[in-house]
Length: 194
Image 1 (cartoon, rainbow, N blue to C red):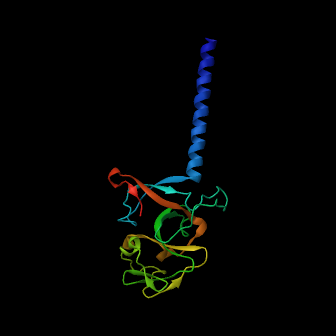
Image 2 (image 1 turned 135 degrees about the horizontal axis):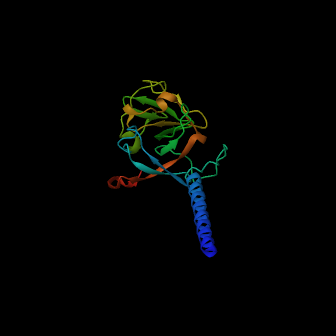
Image 3 (image 1 turned 90 degrees about the vertical axis):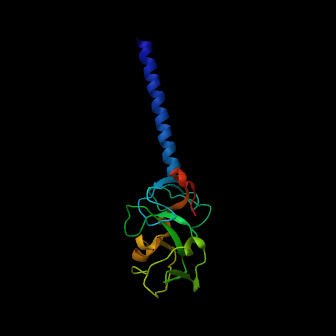
């Protein structure tokens, strides 16, 4: 009987250790490598649909060290046209996903459904294929403004249904969580995110 209790204790100990290691590994991977998100709204249609599940790479821009404002050096910086997950300035408890349109120093104008960066119409097909409505304090007709240092301007691909930088302004560089890289569900839409 004593031998049986020992075996049960040993089995519980092994399972407990395995579970602790698995949880620690999952937290480590989620913190520093990638995270899974589910798209809740239509703001990024047609690129992303409600219910789509995506992988977001934190390595591309560099993961943040938890409970600090420090960021580990990544492989690059956010670029125009990237689809990014970030914490918006007006709601610090949520994550948003939008397309990065302008970076620090860019001059931006939304006019007749088109975007103009630094005086030229945006030709990038990921951006140019969408119609952008003049809405919000930062999206007024014929209002050109410059993106401040350390900030980004982000818009939803489905401009008419998107709460984005036109309404709440600029996103701070430290608030960029990662780059959306891969759509993994539903199966018929699997592919890289452009």
